[in-house]
Image (cartoon, rainbow, N blue to C red; front, side, top):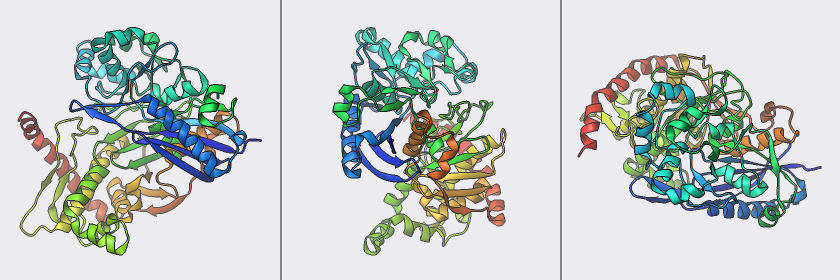
Length: 507
């Protein structure tokens, strides 16, 4: 009997292969990095061949490190970066580098879609705004600018779908990745012929969409030789990284919510029906858990703003951290404790790279507001953390207009900070809890999906074997009251600067 689950997390910076036991223990993990090619200002591409090499190398390294026989692997399941565009021919050969989610070259194509359908109607179909970030806009760009390659295209795939093809020989995607293409109708759970027609692309290029928990196929002899895995090992359909993270953090039923706090940050829920925000500030994705959706609101620069803070204002903490052999962020937390809630009247707008939720303004920029001659560096440190958290608090408020939120589980690097967790509890006005694993949610989610796919697990409730709550922060009433007064001022500050942002962008 096979005893292990092999999960691959095919991310932006590399692939992480992780091995779990059936009772939820992390055995070992290995990461293989690959490069991203950034050029032309806002273009970003990766080589799918680099993905495959990372999959092969990390699989072999993991099996060797764990001293596990390939015959003991019950299933292979992938989580992957979403919203990309990887075009392949009939044989599955890549025709060009993959265009990544962060690539913004398809602005003209996005405008073309909006010239043919209102944003409101588009949002009601796919659950997202029109944007160059999504797959169908990128495919439109290829059709216009690289017609010879477009003519050879058989399928457009997301990252994990390309790897799944190389593992099994089958073209397919899952509902979660399909919902990140801007071509999938969340109301019918089918490819939207209306949107595809408006885009003017070939609908046959989109692969069959399946539940994440289906077995896509088995490891071929060629893939077995390349990866070191056993021929015939089942491969699950898997899912997009955001939805896999929802599984890995235990956000698997209505009434659950989580907050990923890394370089970017998002808050996501599990619901039965799409959350249709009249202002279209939040997005809807399909969940990897069949029958559910996974709405989210995403901010661009959460941890990135915090990292900027460290590198710009925290030379003292950086040097002291070397002496004390601790993270500079531990010392920043200590400094933040020395200034009161509200940072003595300083606000920080955390829009260092534009903003998605709630403003959807690529020209928004960061700002300190309220500085005076008595302001301290510690005040500024707290203001940055509070600004990030209050922006996320706006997202929580949007979702609360549709569903109750009584608790939020936080993961990612920011979840390590007890100061930040308390700040979240006070601003979100709910219980905030962190888990024993803060960086493993996506691979853990993929592993559970794989276990369900091959019948090792009866339901997603098995995630309780993998995770446990380690820390809980409850709202402090006086802090909560203070933040309720400050948050409207932060929103008012952003709106007051919108024209300034536009003027700056025009320089």
